[in-house]
Length: 253
Ligand SMILES: C[S@@+](CC[C@H](N)C(=O)[O-])C[C@H]1O[C@@H](n2cnc3c(N)ncnc32)[C@H](O)[C@@H]1O
Ligand SMILES: Nc1nc2[nH]cc(C(=O)O)c2c(=O)[nH]1
Ligand code: SF4
Ligand SMILES: [Mg+2]
Image 1 (cartoon, rainbow, N blue to C red):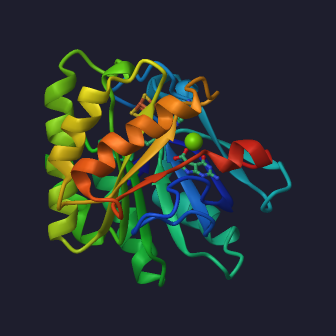
Image 2: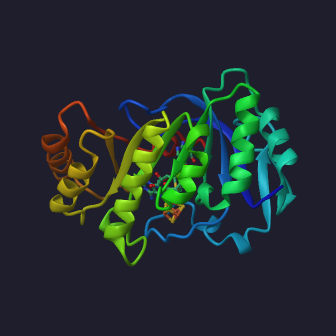
């Protein structure tokens, strides 16, 4: 079984804020898959979007050392499992599968999640959720999921509205399978309050929402808190929170 990988490292989860299902501040091993079918304007993992150009992947030799070993793509499942286990510091909350978009490589993703579960780890899926048919394949193996709702200002794809509906469908599938799920919305100064109301209507009663400012932050506090209020008025005050990419401020991976 082969995978196109980007990197494997050990850090703490820097996103998700305090809503239910978030693993913010928990220690994780991150497994970043190469390749994505979307093209978010502000993506901080751009170099990994085109999988055919990711010739090698890196794995941390030891946590927080900044020292990496490089290997050619594609990777074998065994190599990736070995890289993960080498970074097991004994305090790992869950394994985070991110990217790129991990669900695009659904067969090896599933095999890896099965293997990590059998070794006693929980699985945390970080996904754009735009492909519910693929989400179905890994839903039973997912303990936690952070599913992005792509705002119109991300310009992720041409048919943005149908993408949002598919993301919500993925959340439903994951929830029905028993995963702890929250939605993450990256906002900018151009984000429309009316759009946030629409996302909130779709998520109401389904999953909590975190609002995460695009980095580097350009949205002002007043606008951010107005968007928060729009969402909370629809979803309920306990179901909305803020999320910041704290790892970027602390200069860790
Ligand atoms: C790189 S994506 C990979 C997983 C999946 N493709 C997705 O978009 O959800 C991981 C997370 O980083 C967030 N992210 C990426 N670039 C960002 C930026 N410049 N500012 C804020 N969040 C960002 C995404 O919204 C997503 O929640
Ligand atoms: N520390 C840390 N937390 C994260 N949460 C989501 C990340 C991602 O890129 O998916 C990420 C990441 O790359 N590093
Ligand atoms: S979906 Fe995720 S990996 Fe893909 S472009 Fe958007 S932020 Fe980047
Ligand atoms: Mg990131």
